[in-house]
Length: 372
Ligand SMILES: Cc1cc2nc3c(=O)[nH]c(=O)nc-3n(C[C@H](O)[C@H](O)[C@H](O)COP(=O)(O)OP(=O)(O)OC[C@H]3O[C@@H](n4cnc5c(N)ncnc54)[C@H](O)[C@@H]3O)c2cc1C
Image 1: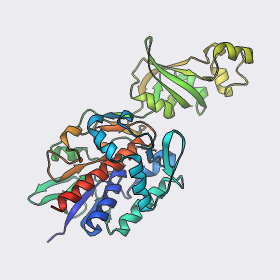
Image 2 (image 1 turned 90 degrees about the vertical axis):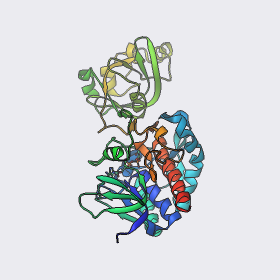
Image 3 (image 1 turned 60 degrees about the horizontal axis):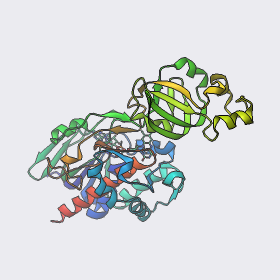
Image 4 (image 1 turned 135 degrees about the horizontal axis):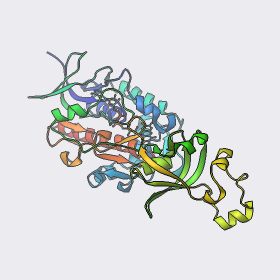
């Protein structure tokens, strides 16, 4: 007779790895299996924070999230940044705080986080099975049977669906599985993405230039949002964290106005420079931007980049379809975690925080359920 695991975790990204580690610790590793479609777990984790993994933020609160924030709030408050950092420390990971409350591994290497999670999964006796692209999940009398093309079916009493979103995702997805679990998704759109602009001719000479700026997103006479930080010019648009933060609200025809000298008012700037920018800006910007425009250097939005260039997916399974532990109200014994849910965060460690905290919350509930 085939082995029946207590928990099968589907998807070996941030939430799946955390879920599998914690479940192996609580339930005993022999009862837990992690199924991953790709040849390795945690591929996206290695890309996070420019390879440094901004894993949580001191300022986690519902205000930094979008989607079903009211329903996510109790999970965020139960699994605070302190709790996440304490659990990582319990696993052996030291972290350090950088600017704006962002936490990174002490090594400043995403690979440290991934290697540590894998090592603990191994230490706790959990099993990792790669190239297992889940195609069908069947509910049985005692739990679930999970099918892929290549492998024998896997049976488990409970499942944790952690298949992530569409942003820079691999070829496999968990969205078709949702239907089998009787769940729906809200419309999906890329978030935290570069913004493409119409006037690309002006942009071309600026390709590769980086500038510190205050960026305003304007629609008609209204300023919708303002951010500050490093703008990166590409041949088709603008990128950088301060642009990502505007991408959710930007629509075709909006104006991105860059204040390239935000620390000085115009009269003072004129007094100091005599109306010349050669001692102030990058040389390519001096060519592209007349002095009078340096505090209002404008581009017209064409559209936001697609999922291939976005960091996160806005939209997903509504939290109203789950209970307060991320447990499915429609398929008993199934829990859903991470980016597949209708919760996405700002830039700064908020999305990984959601991945860890939703997984820890779910596994706690699985453990209680298994003990009944
Ligand atoms: C370039 C980039 C940088 C980022 N940087 C940060 C950052 O610094 N801080 C931050 O907070 N957030 C960051 N994010 C966002 C963050 O990485 C995600 O929100 C987070 O990884 C989501 O975790 P997850 O477990 O839900 O999904 P993922 O980490 O995407 O994992 C999903 C896993 O499921 C697997 N899978 C999918 N379908 C199947 C299937 N059918 N069968 C089996 N397996 C399947 C996938 O192969 C994947 O391994 C970044 C994202 C990107 C793209």
